[in-house]
Length: 286
Ligand SMILES: C[S@@+](CC[C@H](N)C(=O)[O-])C[C@H]1O[C@@H](n2cnc3c(N)ncnc32)[C@H](O)[C@@H]1O
Image (cartoon, rainbow, N blue to C red; front, top):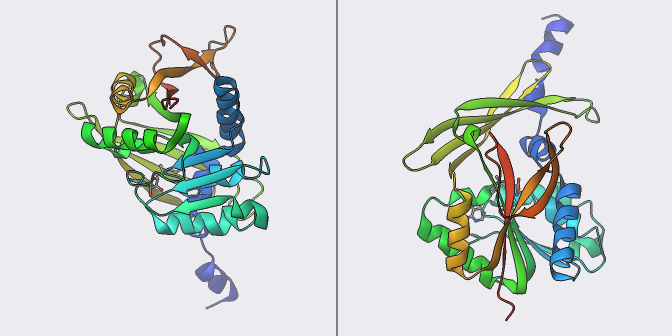
């Protein structure tokens, strides 16, 4: 074996070196934007600062970890079923925080259906994670439990996606800037809408990552979801006892006709091919 052969024998591909949780966070999460948006909305709506935040389906607790850095009184709870994912978050997102910040974040390794205390001012269930619930009774159970987990007048916020393209089996790719990581560099994130059953709205979606050395991680994350609709979630929130249930809809730039990535309360949406919105419900004021 020559030295060159030996080098190539031990050289790992980018796919082998990459960490799927790191790639996921870089591709689909933006704690700075999300927390600013959620805290501003809470302040505008209630007149109070957001200090007690719960992140359901928190995964690596990326949002919670950022939230506790934003104010000395901010406290966060992250709830997730998957211990290895929480553990990754503890190592990569929580360990770098100061001891004081670390004390203000709790991770709960349980089912979101079962956790109520301590109560929070806001619960966020983002990146459509609640779509893991496939039937009305379980979704109602989730929302009823969430309502009981909120302080009086607290807000439940869920993002939701739809539009005709949401039911098309297709792969959508995005280039992700990652030049700070010399080993991996920029990479491609693929959102794969793989199977969809119009009878049940059961949906299999997949996330793949590919790299400049032509290696890839197929099925880094796979989700068996039900594609819920805005009216279904609104009706279930109503049944669960939420009040003032409303939708935040993305603004449109009149010059470009593109979305502005700012969301405002609206009474009616547009039949866009693909949209993301937020559904908000208020827990009774007590
Ligand atoms: C799509 S990831 C969300 C990651 C991250 N929070 C985000 O917003 O992108 C879904 C997470 O939900 C968790 N999960 C699924 N069912 C759950 C349940 N019933 N209770 C708590 N966590 C659950 C999974 O373990 C996974 O970490």
